Amino acid sequence: MQATPDATPPLPPSRLSPAPGVRAPGLLTALGLIVLYFLLQATVGALIAFALGLWIGLRAGLQHLAYDAKTIGHQVQVMLAQPDARAVMVMLVLCVAAGSMLWLTHRRWPRLWSLASPPGFAVARPAQPLFYLLAIVIGLAAPVLGGWLTQWLAHGHKVPQDIQQVGAEAALPLRVALMAVVVTVGPLVEELLFRGVLLSALLRRLPAGWAVAACSLLFALVHLPDLGFLWYALPGLALLAAALAWLRLRTGSIWPAVLAHGANNLVAVAAWFLAVKPAA
Image (tube, rainbow, N blue to C red; front, top):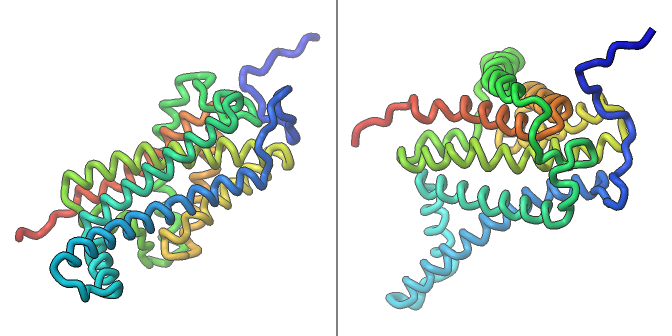
């Protein structure tokens, strides 16, 4: 008796080999790309602060030659502490770092860029476009379910988030611009690095379940600094990451995961527009 073919494509096998003639990034390379992404953010932020300090120093030097580095540094800190300046800083840092990583990854592994199956990065159309709808549902539900789980573990304690404070206090036009970056640029580069490069590298060493678990845990851990290193924020982030990994494996594309990630971020930043600022 002939078996009926299963319409659902199986998860990738536990161990995978690169496509013929293509050298795929290993685990250390994948982790190095993630580290490089965050180092780029820090570097771009430092360069912006240095440029501001140089501008302040040159401007003040024309009026007062005794303007010292300590005074300039203090003025840079005061400027960057302003909500609008911080919002612009975040957008510049994220866009430059993300653009650099997208360019580097595509230039280094062009043949893996659109390859759907691991070791490819799955920057390709999903097998079934209907998964976009499921991705939106997952993205909208994840912050609600994750928020309940986090609050239950935190016993009512608030979970601070730097980006939330920046967006809530910035002027409306900058809030809109920052929201666009957080909902599009951030999810795209993170899905490429985590569910594209890293997950594919892990699948070459581990069974699918363990690879998804390891990738999801790392995704949660790298976001802890933005959450005040509060451990009870980990489970919600890890569950979101696991759902995004499932979408990537099930569809053969990172685009549904990007859409779900963006929808999750959209719900998270909606509070920026619900807060009413006091009249001046």
